[in-house]
Image 1 (cartoon, one colour):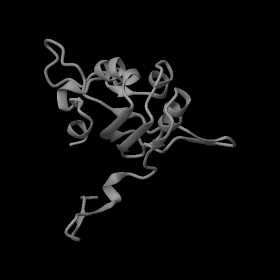
Image 2 (cartoon, rainbow, N blue to C red):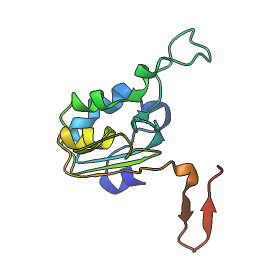
Image 3 (cartoon, rainbow, N blue to C red):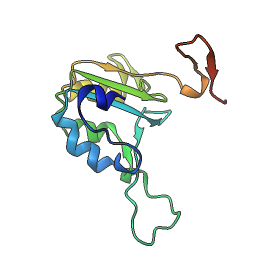
Image 4 (spheres, one colour):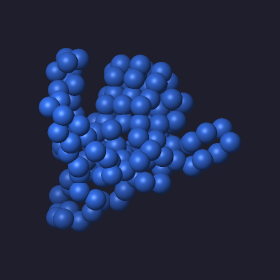
Length: 137
């Protein structure tokens, strides 16, 4: 839906690889992630690139996790980064604030970042008709 509103085809499912995201991230004014996040640092799980003969083997995390270091190596021109990911506002707490993926986007040039400090599995969502949906714990 967001892609249609801004006139850009979104990267979804198997197209949302770490490589594809890093190739496009510096050329857009709005970034919106909806994915799983790492509870410790808020890093974002993307789609791994399938390799021949990989079967059901789980690839190494560096093949699909978008890390603070990855974000720090690119120039982000986005006016807004939305991190609809579990723990996307999480990170190491220091005197200067929370050091995590959201802060990495700000350090790379994003004007504003919206993230979540809690796991989405504990959130309730209200639909337009007023009913409440609860995700399983």
